Length: 221
Image (cartoon, rainbow, N blue to C red; front, side):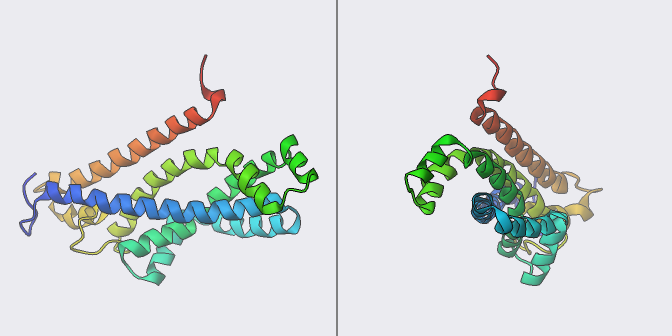
């Protein structure tokens, strides 16, 4: 692949960029899952006006595209990889909140939960020991999809200048800086874009595989 305009090895920088993208994916997953699962758990189990209030706030977040909200947060926090990851984590939780709420509504109506309530099991213990473990499977499958989407969105933020800053070898930033060489050295911007595509595709396929594994109804035979 040769070197870039400053004499830096392109292949090495693309490989090193994987560390940045995977770090972003982990930060986004941890933030969004922690916030979303906690909110969804409380909303689904409490019900009533608490559930309605939380879901209305969630709907407000869902009314805007994730990338637009992430751009707003990133602009407010300042351009950097860490701030881009934080922004994505803060706007990605509503999907997990709604998913977790739906699962909790199903689980809390099951007989063993009603029996636990009847014998006086505390709310905290009931949520932690009985409701959460039996409602978390769809969230686990969705986490892998979130990792791929986070890498893609982070690359988009870096491409427009709201994410990683030079000289970081982040994939989106590499595409942005190398696009002016598209006619003379097409492989320079193309390799970073191709790696983004392959990585996101791999996480998507892994998410589908995990979902099939966790849901016996989707398995044949």
